[in-house]
Length: 117
Ligand code: AMP
Ligand code: ZN
Image (tube, rainbow, N blue to C red; front, top):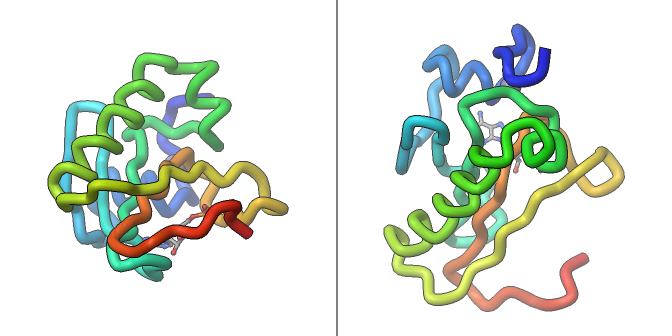
């Protein structure tokens, strides 16, 4: 069921503390941790504690938590002293989504090209 923990979901396991992660922030509804394979000097993932497959499903099923994720993006940027940063939601394998638990990538700490690849 949407929102319920998924047995085989890596990010649900991080929320539950069953898989280690370098957690930088937590709220009642979100966890932020460093990406294991950083694509920029600062690369942090923000996830809702509840399981939704992607950002659109989260926004449809729990819009207030989708807003929490976006609010946390600025909080992470402030903590990391990022003046500029990029927030990315990959949706679907063709866009590079590999973990099917909604997450925002926060990328910064270097100049970021636009348009992205
Ligand atoms: P995506 O490709 O958009 O689904 O993003 C998934 C991200 O999760 C990738 O950038 C991975 O490097 C990252 N990732 C995978 N496993 C872990 C982990 N155990 N801890 C932190 N980040 C991870
Ligand atoms: Zn999950």
